[in-house]
Each structure stands twice: as C-alpha cells, then as structure tokens.
Figure 1 (tube, rainbow, N blue to C red):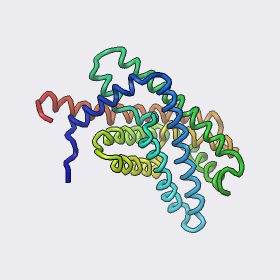
Figure 2: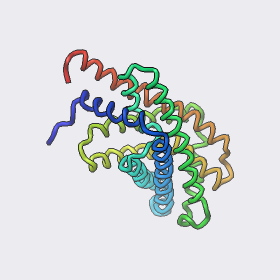
Figure 3: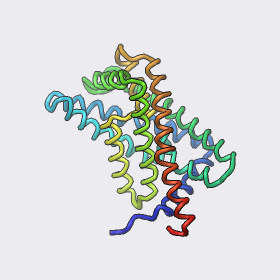
Figure 4: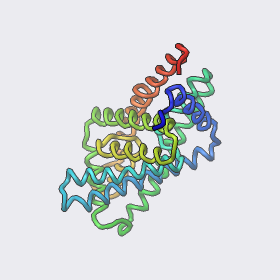
Length: 264
C-alpha cells in the first residue's frame, strides 16, 4: 500500500491550489461560488427525502442517520465538481497568504471569501426557491425540510457557535486531506464521509444551515429571516474560528517546524 505524502508535500500542494484560488478572475469566483450553492442544496433535499421515507418504518433516530448518509452526496458534488464552498476553501488560500508575506494576499483572500459566501447563498437560494414549489419534491419532503429548520432555529446562540466551530474544523480538515488524496475515488470517499458526519452531528455550516433555515421560512411558520441572519453570524464566526485556529494554523505550525528542522 502506498504511503500518504508527507505533511510538507501536502502543504506544498495546498499552497499551489491556494495560489490558483486567490488569483481566479472575478467571473470564475462568481460562477464557482454560485455553483457550490446550488449543488449543496441537492444534499439538503436528499437528506429531507431520505429521512421522510425512512421515519415511518425506522423511527426518527435511524431516519436521521439515513438522511445524513444521503446528504453526503452534496459534498461529493462540490468537491468533484471543483466548485467553491465557503470554509472548504480555507486551507490552501490561507497557506498561500501566509507564505507570501504580502498585504495584497490577505486582500485577495478576503475578496475570495466574501464573493464565495455571497454567491453560495445566492445560488442556494435560487435552488431552494425551485424546490419550495409545491409538487417539485415527493410528499412529505417539505415537512421534513421545515422540521430540520425548526431544529436549527431553536438552538441557543452558544450552541450555534460551537456547532459552527465543529463544522469549520471538519470542512477545513477535509480541504487539507484532499491534498493528500491521490485519486478521484479517494477524494469522493473523503468528501462523502465528511458530508455524512457534518449532517449527522448535525453541525452548523454557515451556508448549509442558512439554506436549511431559508427553507424553513418559505415552507413553515416558525422560522423567520431573523433566525437566518442570526445563524449566518454565529455559525459563520464559528466556522472561521474552527477552520482557521483549530485546523489551518495547527497544520501550518507543524509544517513550519518541519521546515525549520530540515525534515519532510
């Protein structure tokens, strides 16, 4: 069995990918961000449909497990399609910005994150509007989507932040591990496992949870736009803290130490 690449090699690959992402033209940032938003909604809808089908026979706990298994396909679509999902693009661009030691790199990084987050939400909102039309999804799927949104909206602010922290850590770990993957098959497996764990938690990713809540606004009567905005702020802050502090800076310190010792 082939050995995984050394941390220094993984980090070097991440820097190369980060350079590509930081220097993407605005049109490419916009289109890939929009594409990731539309794509992740398929995972959200798959979760709702699978859970609704399984619940009458298996009960709520197992139905949620099956729904999480279905959600994983959304993350696979994002990763294999090479689109830009907020937090999934943390590791490489940050590694590049650190390596460059230039203020312009951090400006490019902020621009990338801002464009991607906004277009993720716009693209996802378009697909959510389509799936919210009565008759578009199987019977019961709209109820499952509204119920999931109610569950997200009733969590405390602290719980939303910590769930966001876990999601940011998990997806940034995915972006790191993808640079160690040598084949499309291994990338698919990694993306699917992380997608399953993200939904099984469930953990609050700023885009996925925000779009879940948007479904709740349009399909139910207990979720408001205020809930959407609050979740975006708290989950987004958690995503940033987890992705940057717990993952990116940790692996960066590891690699800087390796370089300093002349190993790798």
